[in-house]
Image (cartoon, rainbow, N blue to C red; front, side, top):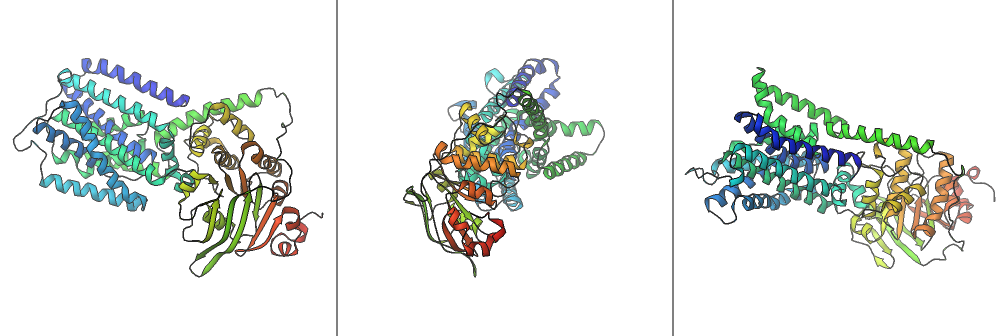
Length: 580
């Protein structure tokens, strides 16, 4: 947990303690009632924080999950089930989990507005069902009693704050795990997440399940406040309004959830006090949500990011001002020299054929990456290099031929499974969540929380800034280096690097060449490099395969291949290669 998160959590806990101690003593009964409503809304906002704020899924049915928690609470109360209020509250939250998973299943195939329509459809269906089938106890007015220590409104306010705080701490802990960090990556690029070995399906369903549980807890708390509830308490309009607040404020941080809860509970009263129409509040939320969607970040995200950027710039300034022991870059270990193709094949691709309709993108391509080697894949634009990387890493299904990694057939496996088995890749265009720090991104890429010394060594090796620096302040070239570092951090058998030198200056490209050449010896990772920079290829690769219109036109030791007349004619041009 970084310093900003610790400060935010500490501040939130301090405010919670003060609120529990002081508000019931100083507020009149009506405002205590509103305070309870605000905390319950903040709990439900935390469910939006998981699914909308972290995972970036447009879910419009969170109040439907809350209704499930409320229904279970009342049903257990009517049945006088054992366990009492606390157990019923927990069971209400758990009852919403399988429904959340079921609603999350369409998210594995659709996303964006289409998924929003599906979740809104569930909210509409829940409205219909609840209006036809009243909540248990409504007919005979069987009321739910609060537990004895929290029977008064003041006491129940304290209880709701305790529940909110516990959920905030637990969600904060989950947020620092690889699962929680993977939600941020899913929001920006599902392909990148899969390439890092993240199961997109499992991660999405976990987000739906956890958010449904939290919403179910919120619904149970609402029953405790009102003793009985009606369908209007969970109307689909409530989900829409809270979704707008979630987009605008960012309830995946505790302070954002609190602000969202206050707005949701108190806005109607404020509008009435200042003689403004109730619909005006909806207009304000809608406008704020549109601005947040346009920027891609909520207000709490922006505030936190600016604070982290200020702290990071101080760190970078101190590092720049620190006296260097040696102005020259320390030498990097080079791989042991050997004849090309000396290692046992760790990646073997045979007869790889990819068709898109009538277009043959790859035609029976063979390529081998020996263990401990850096192998190049070059060719003009449109030659099929990116298609090759996509097919080998599992992002293109239905190809012909075979792909073997360390003797194991990978055909039929998805990209996340291939990544987990030791085949990692980078992309030409990086899509890294700006909220993450460099340490966070290495955690996602490596599949574990790296020890700080190991992470620092890796970042320093690839010329990246210190790990606590947020991604938002590093340039595009550094993000590409970070992407390579994250792929290598997993210690895969093979790393497929797609144009890592893009955005680098000539000097930076040469430094990158030295680093890539040292990767097999230092990290035990073989490399397949796709690159247009011929100086980098010559300085790094022992072997090169050349593609042209999906066909292999040359393959072998780098020097010999680059002198091949067919290669010169198809791609390089005689003037582009220094005379040997």
